[in-house]
Image (cartoon, rainbow, N blue to C red):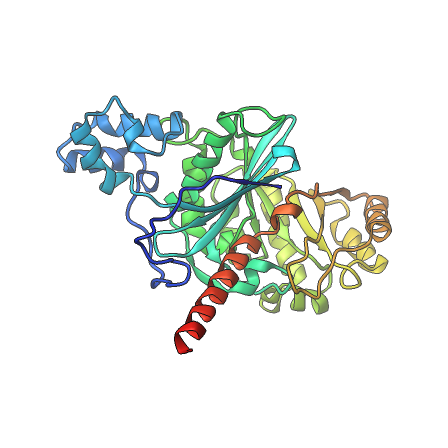
Length: 392
């Protein structure tokens, strides 16, 4: 495991983790706006409209996030545009690397002190960014570190996009060992329930897939949006004319267990959630990814594999089995390898395409929310220790 250098916080400023401000949305950023709105913004500031394209080319085309590095802009112009169109949205708290540099995880502090995480994963043929869409999560899945934190707030379009632009810059620097120097895929599988922040996530997807300089120019087919099964939003996504992959975090094929593992199932049951997923597949022609975290003695029984196979047989769906990355102090643990192999065998025997997700980032608290939970725990412990010292 390698801990990477981060931008230090000023010693003159209070620790924003220990002293949390009221959650609030960040100031406007150019990534919140389409090109026409950026042009309107710069002209309102007294700059010519072409400045919008200059800024956009730097940010989306060259992956430059610091306006001081945009040296073709006059110094006075840079100063004028910074607060209005390029405010700092993400400040790194901790960056860590493992898997010989192929996996890199960043914990970010937002302007209001909220914490989010993003991960960059390199493979021989691609580089994938896993990004957060919310600070915390309100879905309360008991085996998930983020679900245990509760929801702080939604992220803005630009807070989502800025994670990707930063990670794309890391990939472009050649820092991801054994991988191409270009970010090619984005998965909305970090902190939060993406479809609970629907308008901003969809706008972020459009920004990521619009050609440069208006956007990052990624392929829609290389974007994956996950959900625990918010059925109305899934149906709304079907009508968006997008070719992204929909990933359904199912985790159990039966309502009795899924009610416990994914509490939103108490509102939309397995049959209704799968119907919405299959509707998306039928309208887009895109195969659904069924995410299934294998949990020892909880959802890994052979009969549940058989039931899942029955539900998915003949459907445009692929099962992505996830060896659980346990959170500290959790009662949940990963299924043993022989159990995992039998689960895979039964699904494939039912004719369901199945793979086991590559386990990445265990050395660096790879499950989403673990770094943030650790940082909050450390801050709380520090605050309690300081209070005890004052009391003495």
